Image (cartoon, rainbow, N blue to C red; front, side):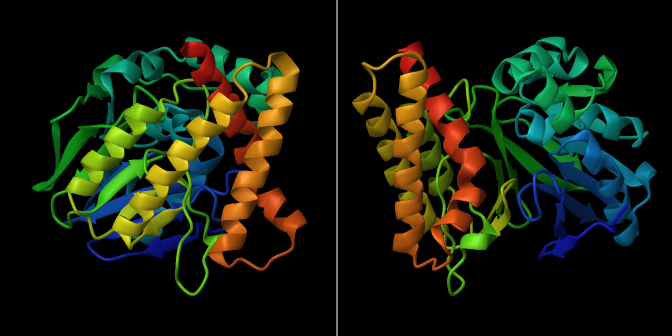
Length: 316
């Protein structure tokens, strides 16, 4: 197994590359405070050894982890929660009240994942989900707080990507851990230190008006930095927030323009339009890599974003 790639930031915050899908795609964040640690999201089962190695690199034993804080229960964020909790004997797991039951009994979560990906692909991506004991799960709704060695983290309900989504505000730094709510920003597309960002409309609870309201709420907190699961720290938050709001509206408009289509044709046409939209954004940002490489990096997002827009259209 390769050593974990740990990216250090200020305030005892670190990103660990989970190696899910590819390098620099999916981050687990570790916060260290006075010899204790908390994790934000877990990635998949395959990431658990990397997280344990990252903790060791930071001088943290498994017994010193107090919290595993989930932004939401999509499996690229929470699929490894049960397995990782089994290796962290003193940790409690925090999760939105809508998601808590899926950590204790992941059978419905697994069924939904198989519906999106197919059973064989779901097994390949995520392995077998491990339940978390109910007495180790803490439901954290809007306004809840979590303390790590006296360092407070505030929970903010953030619907739009999913109804069971929260963001986590570190009161020490004022920074936010936003899962997928504040979008996706791949380091592959950075140009002269500038990040590109776009929404994730993964099935099945994408809600553009709710997401724009959530973005306004997060931007009102004026964080200097935001930590994304895909991928890690971004700054210049007001500009990225404006881009997120513009792109969320563009996603909704793209869906409405294809609303009358049905079935496979609607998925295919939306994937084509989503590809054109995202590749166009990458080009306007100044990325010069060839289009085939750009589309390879965006392939998962193009497919899932199209499917999520369809789920939103059908829910209307």
